Length: 171
Image (tube, rainbow, N blue to C red):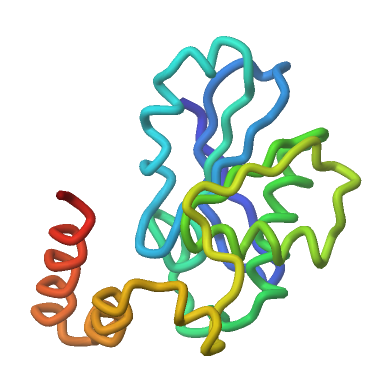
């Protein structure tokens, strides 16, 4: 696996993992909230790597990327970060693959930068809107109740909420 450091739109340092055929069509895997590029380990270790160039950044504040205190509520910064990865690594005709919260990031990118360098989009269990009653209605009420605790500054409370979230993900 190759790794890169890319500077996002506001100078935030982003860790980016890459594997696969350097000459293959790039697939840019974007992870969800509270995850990292490691969310895509199975894809990186699959036969996709024989044919495609697989790239996965750690989003701002996640994984091995820089963790600034602010900017998480700014769609332009999420879009600029993705654009920086696309441009820095020359990901022409890229397929954007967004999972969960990354649906918003991919859509922010498309709204800001269009589809000129994009060959396709794949949204996996993705959200496409947030911050409205209509968006909240799409979420499981149990998850909505966990959100404040997941973001708590109290490590014990945050970990307990994460454990509860993971329990709810498995049947």
